Amino acid sequence: MMKDPEKNLLSLSDAVAWRRELREKGSKLVVTNGCFDLVHRGHASYLIEAAKLGDELLVLINSDASVKSIKGESRPVVSERDRAYLLAALESVSKVVIFDDSRCDKELAALEPDIYAKAGDYTLETLESHEREALQGSGSKIVFMPFVSGFSTTNIVEKIAATLK
Image (cartoon, rainbow, N blue to C red; front, side, top):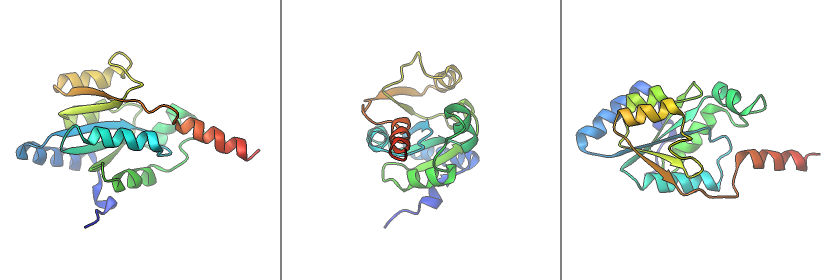
């Protein structure tokens, strides 16, 4: 039976309730976050590997306003709702929550994931400090996934722009 991506788009409060259910069943929750503006092979590889770390993978994605503040006025290319739907449709992703800040420390503190996965272009030192503190405060294991080089949303956007000139 195919999953319905719409049913896997949660509010934070619904995600916290789902998290409680997972904990009661003894299931391990993996959480990751990002903009995921134009989903590419690097994202897919990273999400597949992150999902292997536990029983369920929840992806926190930046809202449109948040992406714009981080990446600039021309971004995002794809709306938050469409990005969330696309991620929720992936087999490796269990649930998706949209957050409206440049960082997701409040969401991480509320969810208390067993494992937090981040791409290998980050280190413990380069993680946003409030997010790192929220994870460490909840006892989450922080795992850096292998980085797939050669894939970047910014590079894809630049390549498209160059072909339009």
